[in-house]
Length: 180
Image 1 (spheres, rainbow, N blue to C red):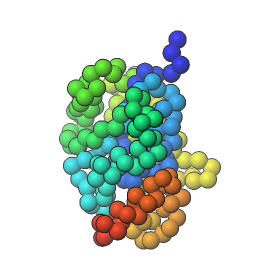
Image 2: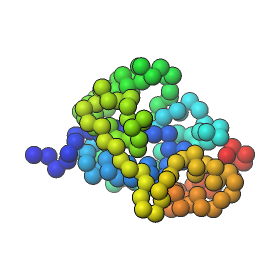
Image 3: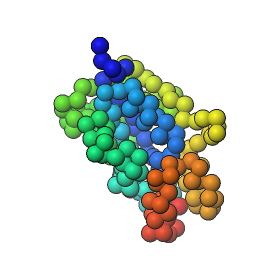
Image 4: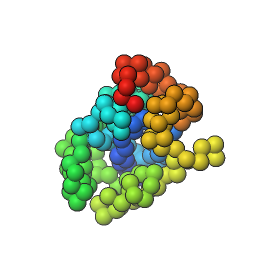
């Protein structure tokens, strides 16, 4: 019997920026799954108010918390562009994974923070795992909220972003004046 509930967990997120809710999802995946794949979506768009951070910056946000040396055989992070075809999206993602991770089993669990985010994979992946992205200290968290706080110089954005990424985001804000 395996020490893990699932062999391969998948989650897709924009992580604009990676916040404590995303971290809760990823923590649960690492606990439950032998292999974990995170796909950072919407790579075709960055430098906008909705998608300010490019793929490399978003990947770095995750790697700051989950160092590659510690998680290299367990955690894979990919970027993927949107195809704007909701009917084909799950097949597009799963074909992408089969091509890029041929030695990994097909995902048997999909993790999301909402039913809406999970519904794309209900007919394609056996186990849908909804993770409550909130906790008793933060009853609501969203990347939109965090971006708005940053835009209006509300220092409380730091309450919703892991401390390991505060400097990364502050440096980004300085380099990209006016994006947020």
